[in-house]
Structures are given as structure tokens and as C-alpha cells.
Image 1 (cartoon, rainbow, N blue to C red):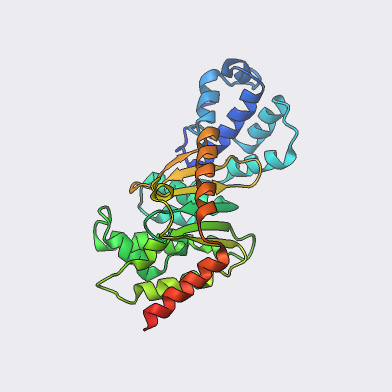
Image 2 (tube, rainbow, N blue to C red):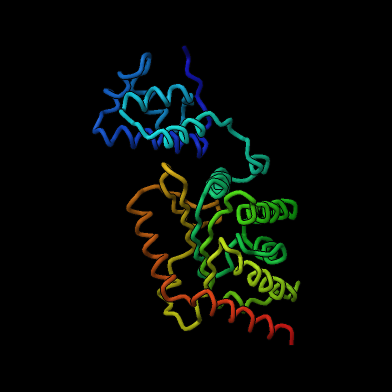
Length: 288
């Protein structure tokens, strides 16, 4: 039977990566693991582990059984992901770079998101007007229609904060310097943006902290970082922001390093109550 080659979507890559982790925990070579499955060879297993070949839910159950995996919750998660048809998310209809599409899908699946951006207010808590100012002035915005599509995507991504069932837990660090932004084309943008931050800071699933101007520059010199954590058994992902959609990694050492960087930055940020007070003071100043 000829195995169909699939587009390596982020979900299929994560299915393959989890199967590879199970194999590596047994110190089992690819060639030996492939022999456990009828009709499989090393090439097929390798391509499944890289997300290049589809693997059915039935095959996932058979392979994990061969590996001695007894965690039914984990197996059910992998089976569900393996059987999910590609292109089912709302983001699939947008003509954006694959890396960005991958990030949006990871974000939609996450249980917890931690974000620090040393320059601007993070995307999940931006207003439409603020997002439009940031996106339309960027070098990769392109034509007006494309810029508006990117704004629409950014706004749609915020649904994860407000979904009725298990809204994502968000911990966001915002530099105080970002509150000083001025936009000639739309002077009311920052007033609306700070109002939104005051609304968001009171959501039970959100922890919002302001990095004060008094913080040492070293704490905001590492670039924009997003850490995504998922339900069992999926590995956390760290994303380093760039104009192409970000570089994503599941490497445990890289994730642990960036988690430490985030926690260190959070430790010098203002507590939530003082961050709220600061935002209120800024809004009052803009009203004058």
C-alpha cells in the first residue's frame, strides 16, 4: 500500500515528535522500532516522526502499545490530533506564511501563554486601533488589504482569552515605555488601548504586569518571547518573534532557558495591583 505524503502541519509534526519521544525513552533505534509494525520500514517511521507522513489513530494506538505506553489520556490526545483533518482552523483561510499559521494554531491549542515584548504592547491584549498602527507601519505589511488581513487575524486570535470553556491563562509583561507611544494619525489610540488593558487586568485568567522604566535595560534586551504550555502530553513551545511569524522550538533546554528569562523579568515587574494603578494614572493623564 502506498503511503500518502502529507503537508507537515504543526499538529502532525507534534504527533510525530511525541511518538519519537516515546521511542527514545526506550533507547530504541528507528530500524528496530519500524520492525514492530507490519509493513513499516525505517524511512516510513522517520517520515512519520517528522510529520511528513500521515499516521492513523489506529496506527498510533498500535505503535504506542508496542512501546509499552499505558497512559490512556496521552494516547487519546495523540490519536485525536493524528485524526484531525488539516486546514480545519479558522486561520487556514488566510494567505499568511506557514510559520505564522503554525503559531496561531499552537496559540489556539495552548492552556497557558506567557509573553514578554520589550517594545510594544503584546498582541493578545491590543485594541484594533493599536494593532492597525503597529501592523500598517511595519516593513512587511505590504498592500492595505494584506495589512487589514493581519489586523483581522490578530483580533481573532484574542478569542482564546474569552472562550467560555477553558479560556487560556495569560501572563503578559508590558514595558512602561510602550504606554508613552504617540500616534499622529490616531491620537486616541493609546487612550483606548489603556482602557482595554484595565479591562484585561481584571480577567481571572490574566496576569498583567508592567515592567517599570526604572528596570535595568538588561531585563528588556532579549527580544519578544512567547512561551506556550499545553495539556498532557504535549511539550511546551517557545517562540522567538520575528516578521516571518517566529521561530518555534520544543527543545527542552531552550524552553527551560527562556522560562527562566521570563520568570526573572516577571520578578522585577510591578505586581498586578500596582500595574493596575499605573494604568489608571496614565488614563487619567490622557483625559486631561
